[in-house]
Length: 190
Image 1 (cartoon, helix red, strand yellow):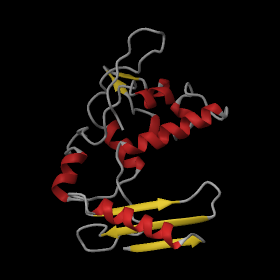
Image 2 (tube, rainbow, N blue to C red; image 1 turned 30 degrees about the vertical axis):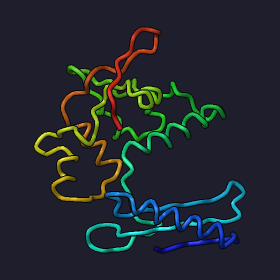
Image 3 (spheres, rainbow, N blue to C red; image 1 turned 120 degrees about the vertical axis):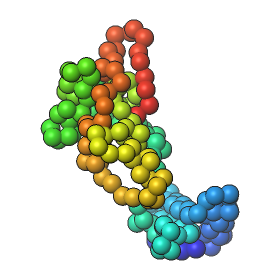
Image 4 (cartoon, rainbow, N blue to C red; image 1 turned 60 degrees about the vertical axis):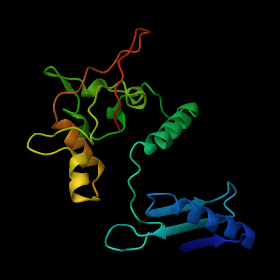
């Protein structure tokens, strides 16, 4: 196990955190683990890593990219709601306010109509956008990303690649829902 520690903390707490990482890694099927702890006052930061980053044998580090998939929605949702509470954004803001035009244009097509410019943050957080899920979407002339991952192993991609996959897949499932009190359609999408 590798440990990175900044600041001062009791050896008893360090031992407890190290045992936590080891216990996590001993669970069936866990090949690698990272646990980070930092109290609200920032007095210390502890990061424990265990295992290999990939099949090449390279050890995990705090900087190793790691695919969290839908777990990121929890973090993103919490941050968006917090920013909304502070008045720094609104759930009804269009995504065009935060994303470059070349990412947004043509992203959401349904029955020949481009709905991309009416997508709001609220649609993304509530799965009511109708957008395809990038892991299972099938871009023209390619395989779904999930099948590529299963066949070829771990890969790295960025947001622009995910946008491209969704844009060039089949039409979206439905138009973005209206929030007028009527029943809404929802379909999961990262």
